[in-house]
Image (cartoon, rainbow, N blue to C red; front, top):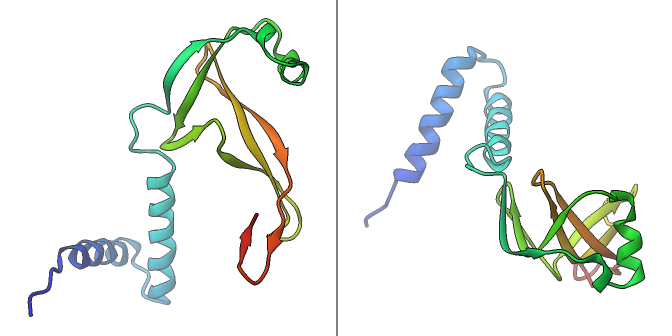
Length: 147
């Protein structure tokens, strides 16, 4: 039987380096887990991405073409020049019109408030603004999903 061990060796090398560099031989497993989680968080934070914001299908934004709710939502940003886009990638995460994003979480882990992205705006400083419509989902405990 042939077995490919390269991924195992890669992880094993990481853990060997962690143990050697930490010089902590009490509760080695906890140290390795913590260091690995910190490393994974660092990788997911976008540390290896060249650009934080990548804009796709960009066009000029004319607020007069939108309804009163959207005009009210952007009224706090008077004086800023916006462009709109169909999708944007921020630190490796892509947001598109129609995607669901988490707006807030209550005290319970399943007490979430979602928003459906209706408009994506970018200002001249490459700041991203998601205009979202609030959506309060129902959680089905047996299926462990929101709908």
